[in-house]
Length: 223
DNA sequence: TAGTTCCA
DNA sequence: GACG
Image (cartoon, rainbow, N blue to C red):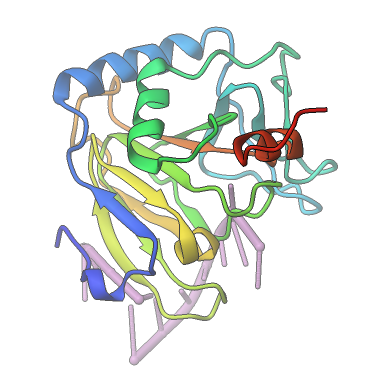
């Protein structure tokens, strides 16, 4: 099964299958893996329990999402292990963000998730951003992933769909506050990434638009 | 509860 | 065995 019934997906969930060409996928994958040189993948840990996640992570952009046992979920400007600023967000992704989300501000964070053979990501809601209503854009590269989408409550019914290399998903509106996760990877089905695996790139606006900017766009006088 | 495991 |  490739697609879920659209009428069972939350309002504001949009899926563009094969939005990126094979050449674009290859170039983007190369650029992401090059970024791992200065911003290496690390194993995130859950708050309090310190249990390791099965997805390895790094970030691009001004801010990156990180988690560890003591600090919990947060955004920060530097890599937790090297202390260096995150690499820049690939330009292709900024173009995609503008075209597909129409959001009037640039994304600040590009979370890079690497899924190996048995990686999964439990059902959760993105809620660590100040800009809670800004859309979230997700780009899939490499092996297919079984993506699951539910509702605002954890117990709400869920539907699943396969995301394949080059697919783009945007969560906006109600879908922005819905649970979602990844149940399974068909590891080794593609050869885009070395010996198999999946890269997911998730772009987010973290900070609210400055009040000054809102007033300016509304025609008000500056300070 | 961004975790694991179990089971119909 | 895959899915939920």
